[in-house]
Length: 433
Image (cartoon, rainbow, N blue to C red; front, side, top):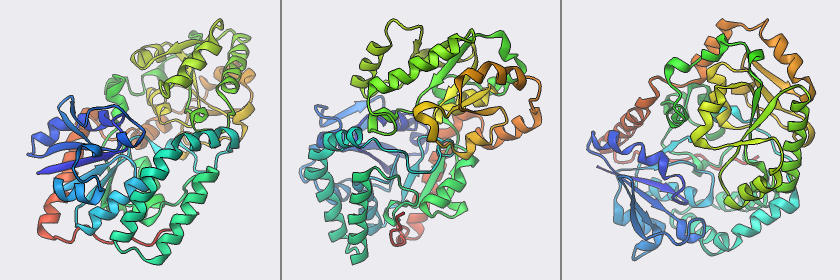
């Protein structure tokens, strides 16, 4: 059986490489088809291998039309990491036309993020849009319009397409996904994200499967570590870690890297006044933003923490200040106090139910209050509530078996297709808010 993975570039290949052994054990081969040559990942070989994963750029095909590539590859199923962009929606349309089952593989815990329209800095967001303009005009939009035409989309979908363009230009978030963004099935990290998938994409409960959290494996968090920090006194440790989302890279909330650096420097000063040292877990991409930020923070007492050191340094912290990032789930699963950044530029930030329901979580409107909150926290921790929260938000254990669970879902999809050739199904008309 041939399973095609589809993505815009090779940066997400790690999510597919992890699946190769489990899929191979079931007689399924994996190939990643990506659109990097369109502009997101230029200069890569047309055909290569990343680990044991075969990787192909769409430019390596004689006929580079997405529909024709699917006809050439003839996959038994297609896996996608996201489905809201036009190219991904075009892929889903072509798959449905050809009765190829599709699977959306969540690559984060969406329940950690609040669903609301972020405040957009129009200059910064405009710069982000302009950086993507050539790729969008030359490749992405023709690809999607071609898919609308070749799949005989009704006229209402063309109007929805125009509404999508307006939403993208203004930076509005997608609260309810378009109908052609819904795949045949969906895999999420944990039970906490099943309501999100149902609400946003229109899945039925039985079409969404919780398969486990790969961040636990990626950072070395074992099942034995889960809840371990709830037994430790936060007052014995002086370090606090700040975990960012990366808003500045897409023009949300912060107008520039300089403004974000000022936000971090102010946070560090308030923590230092309370006898605390600040660690900063940064996003490594885009590289130019990371380099600028490191320059602005040079000379401060903020210590940068890379992925390789994340868990080790985290275990030495008393607490974390977090933005709306799926990575916040790691310190929460450890049982550490979490402070939701809601001060300064982040005053309007809203957090998702996975975080707001965390028994050891606190909205932080003033960094100067952290020490007082930590002192109260140790006296009122509800260990039963914490254990119930972990059960709902951790995902199935062992986390190492996540790839096996995903392989079982795909195997079922392919088997169902063999029994019922029209398994591609139909999608509801697009709904936009």
